[in-house]
Image 1 (cartoon, rainbow, N blue to C red):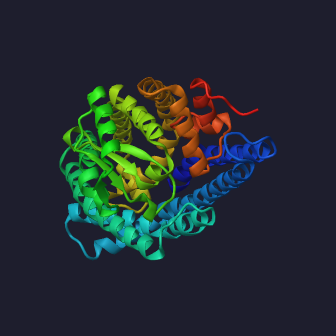
Image 2 (tube, one colour):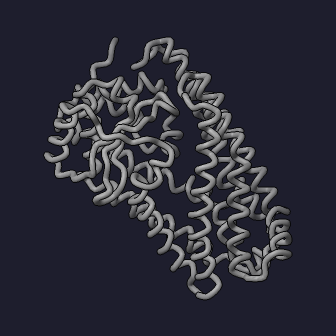
Image 3 (cartoon, rainbow, N blue to C red):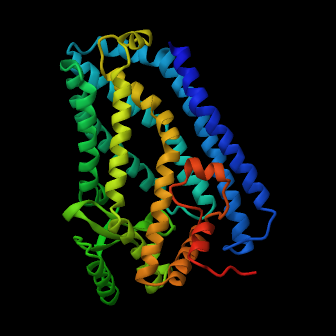
Length: 404
């Protein structure tokens, strides 16, 4: 059974992802020898090299992920099961401990890669401003949050699996509720654990933003500035939360780099997502994926788990779901990306209607210049990975005047 699972993982996920990543590397390398667009020539070359290094890093992660997968299904699950059976008698507690042991160990083993990405690669290209102390504090906080949330919800899922025939259906409902709850609580509970949010002090900008929000009918709990520059120099803004918990979040880096009109155009784009109910649509799509994942888990036979060394432990089902989830995510991404890119074009159109096309286009170009995002991508890579259309396509729709 381990061999079959590994074959499925490699054939449906590793090989196609590896192939698409190589296509993207070759495409960028080819484009590096063409005339620079949007970015100055020096930044164009730099952003292309950074994009290539990020993909090579992704390939290294893919190989590492595959090795971990092989280790888990061949002997990891069996060793963890044997260890827990010597300490715990309760079947439900065994299940929770099994899943949490797997989840935390998997997370811990990824820390070196997270460190390299943040503290070495991103610093090399001038993006990361995180200190070593801050990196490990953030990692510890994430570990604690993951432990608390994981333990609570895994207990609920495993309780259902131990007591109900159609546990996967109840589990899917709980997971969907959990995702909704997280989105509601994120801006007021979880995000402040990692960043400081202060009310916007620029009264003139505050008035303009409030006027923009009122014009669209967007009710929020306030406009806040996030100290993003403590960790990263890139620019962004977003609306966080659902319902009364909604917040307008501006990165402090954005305030320092983009004009007031450009900022309003960017917020106008984000308001387009609100106006078109894209958050609701995305939540619906996420709900379908969660349901499909739990439905697959519901048909996994006990024999499969026993072949992997997992006996009378429904935590193994959750662990196997996590291990196999990249396959579902990979093949669902083209569908998700298709609708998401359409939504981005519609949001651009809405944002431009609140200001004008030129203002929004110039703001997007400014962000790309500051974030050093390489403007070209292979169509297949876009199809499988992009939730946003390539910037060049967005700028053409916005009738941006490219330099000759």
